[in-house]
Length: 116
Image (cartoon, rainbow, N blue to C red; front, side):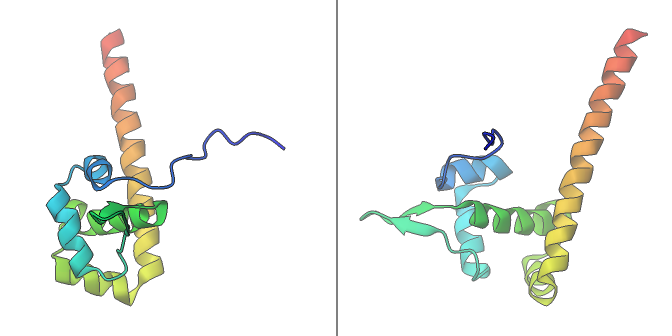
């Protein structure tokens, strides 16, 4: 059996870590939790510290894509996600891949421009 080097060993992320991943404020994540009922991170300890799983982060990635990247209002994003959950997930994934390809191509162009 081969060792899977791509596997993420961390099970939970703090609200601060997740906010930094997406360039958001922690208060934005808390607000999204009230607006999107399926976004419910685990809370632990007497202080109710939020712990986000990979599944929660995927939900946030989808919401972030709809609201921050594509410019939907929260109500429109909620409606679109509820109406077509699988399609919204796939579109977010495709958009992330395209953004990655664009960034790679821009880096390659900068390198080629530096050779001239």
